[in-house]
Length: 253
Image (cartoon, rainbow, N blue to C red; front, top):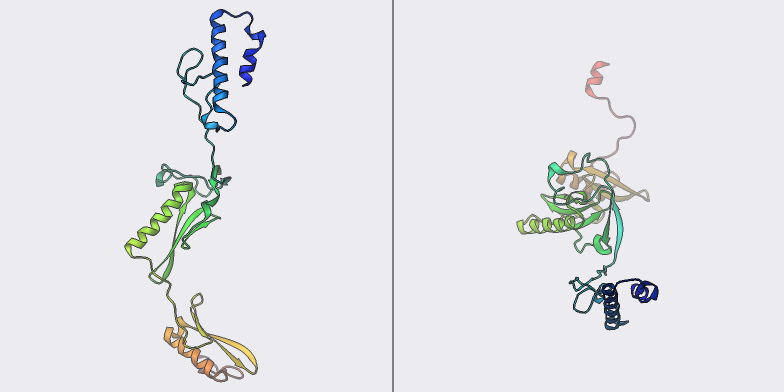
C-alpha cells in the first residue's frame, strides 16, 4: 500500500517516458485490485506480492509466484542443548562430536509438550539431555539412553519408543520381582540385600538386619522371623562382657 501511494505522487510521475508511465499505472491498478479483493478479513497467506495482478503477472507481463506467509501455530520455545544436537550424520559412531566430554551448545526451537511421555518407562533425563528407556530383565533393572546429541531432537524420542516396542515384540519386558513378606514387620531390603525385622524390647522400638549374602536368602529370612518372635534372646543372643579370645590368641599367650 505504501508503494502504491508513492507511485501515485506527481513527483514520481514527472520526467519519465510513456512506456515507464504505463508500467507504473498498471502496477497501481494491480495494487488496487489486490487490496480490494483481499479485504480486511483475509489471511496473510492469500495476499499476493505488491504490484502483482490477479492472474499472477507483474507490471511487465511476467508470471510471479504468489507469496504465502507461514506462521507456526503450535506452542514452542527456544532451548539451548548443552551437549549439541545430532542428526543422521552424527548417528554414525565415527562422526560423533569430539571431544565427547566437552559441551557443544546449540539453540533450537522445541515444542512445549516435547518432554511429556505417556509411557512411565520412557522418561526425559534433563542432565544429560537424553531419553531414557527402563525395563526389567533377568530380575534386574536395565536402562538405555537415546541422547539428543546423537539422534537429534525429535529422532531421539522416536528411537526410544521404537526400542521399547522392539523389547515388547521380543518378549523381553518383565515385571519387577516382588518378594512377599512372611509376616508384618519383616521385609526384604533389596538395596542392602538384608532381611529386616522390627520389634519392641523394653518399650523401645528396635530393628535388626540379617544379610542374605552371609546367612543365605532363606536363612536370613528365618533369622529375622525368629528375632521378631523372640525379641529378648532370638537366635543370636548378645554376649555380655568381653568377648572370648580366639583359640590362636590363647595359644600365643
